[in-house]
Image (cartoon, rainbow, N blue to C red):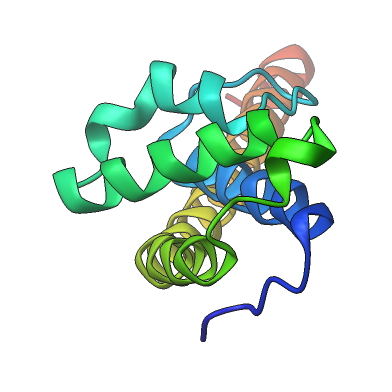
Length: 132
């Protein structure tokens, strides 16, 4: 399940993926906003278990350092890949179910609202025509 980090350019996509999953599972970002992992940890990092919070902090720090190639080459890519794998394994199943449940509730609410409006229009028409 762990993604192999070949070089330091793989760190930013791993951090972005974790950030998106935290956003999908716990919220903390506006629609269309894609904050970096460090920002998502400040906003919703407390929702993660301590072990995973530490792994996410290491990944966020590596994401910050990956902008400097000389320092980024010194990072422990295998450890970061394990941290990414642990975070993905924890966040992905929870995020998928929450997203599915949210979509289902939103769809059901839309249908109920439409039926309510349709019923109100039908009652209004029957009252106007004198049937009720």
